[in-house]
Length: 221
Image (cartoon, rainbow, N blue to C red; front, side, top):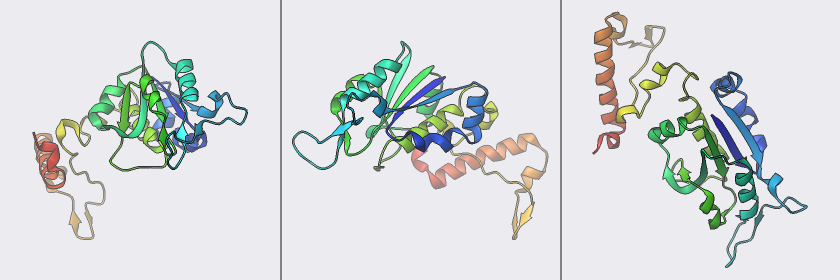
């Protein structure tokens, strides 16, 4: 998979690309992640990429031309172009699985007061990571990238994400490690039994119990 991210702040991604699972996925050639500075596609000498909004109002608006030029330079026949914006489809695990099957993604990080509406004419999918507003789309683009990359075949053991929270509309089951007793809190006896069928049954029951308690909305409908 190739992920191209268009941003005004490429330095924000330095640590993100050089730590943990993302770094290993890149090193093992499961994914190629390219960070592109939108200013590189500006025709202005001062690399301007934003301007004041028509009709008045506060803030600066991301202009069409540099975004169009960047997408046109990077897009292939099998590319999906994504715009990170608060007005987009609310991101979830199902969408992460869908995106993990693609060969090429371009993610546009919105910024400032907004973006010229005409940019949406070259966007296939608008995504939001929640009903709140951030200063830009950089952190949301990292969220999407991280959630997608870990689902690419070979990046992590498949069993590690089969029981992830939100799979089958259920949260993950509780997990424990040593010591067996900590400040009076004990590891459930069933996990120490070595009886795999009972452990599986307990974990399934706990997933349902936890979901009912913490996120009953997931089970509705």
